[in-house]
Length: 69
Length: 146
Image (cartoon, rainbow over all chains, first blue to last red; front, top):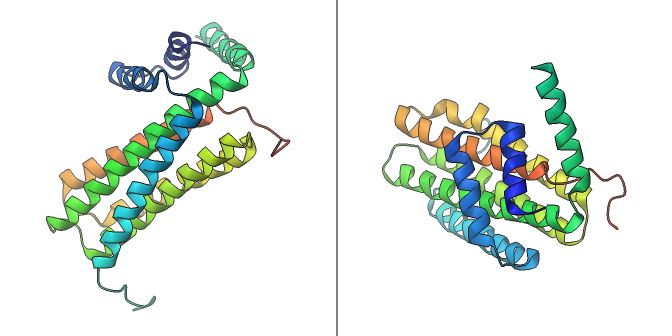
């Protein structure tokens, strides 16, 4: 199933707004040429970046009060 | 309308049946990549809102904890896909959706600033939509890990 067919399917089923379709189109274009494993590695890298930033930010906060207080 | 809906349903079923394992997995992986990027933006928006003192320490802790869970769900789904474990990927995505629903139904309630509330709500809705779209490209599998 090529990218054009996928987009047609999405539009037909969900009746997306044009902006959403453009977003999906941009994503498909951006990741064209990468293998699924390469995309997966990129995804894990992005998620791990979020996790690292979150852990750093949480470490700056004062400890949460005990439950019930 | 009935005829259009039945045609849509028939088309969807035919498309999913015709969707080869590799192409569906590739599309789902791309959408999970989109989820990861959206979650990163959400996490950064929360941090900015806290730095600007728009949300409290407790609210930031709550939203960031949920964002972390969303990232972990995304990673679990990606890994499950790579092992052709469709059932495992669906479980991981459903866990991510559950966390998003909790954030929307409970976490947003305490946000007083209307603009921030709207922005965070939009970000969470976008995340939920992307996760749901990814599910659409995963054939339900009763076999688990192949």
